[in-house]
Length: 129
Ligand SMILES: [Zn+2]
Image (cartoon, rainbow, N blue to C red):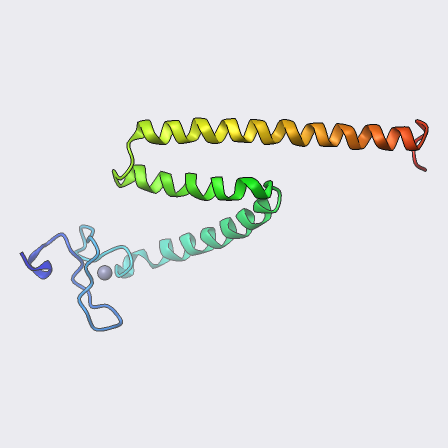
């Protein structure tokens, strides 16, 4: 069945001249081509921009060792959604990632306690002015 024969596909033409093959809404156009949804698209773009800035700020707070784990989990979310990964596999990944976070966190707490103890020993317990 050629794509254009399906009523479920967008009837608009893409910028490159090819037919749009995105899934259409009841208007017969996809979310990107439906002119009635321009306001919603603008809102979504603004939210996307805000989220990106917030994610970039938060990413600076994540221990570097965990950045790769976060990316893998984010990918796994899409894979479960598309049926490429079983929920059981994703659950196992989340459990392992949680264990990694706990190990790294305990190491970080230990490091901070040591730094505080060293600071206290070198300053003879007196607080800096
Ligand atoms: Zn379209």
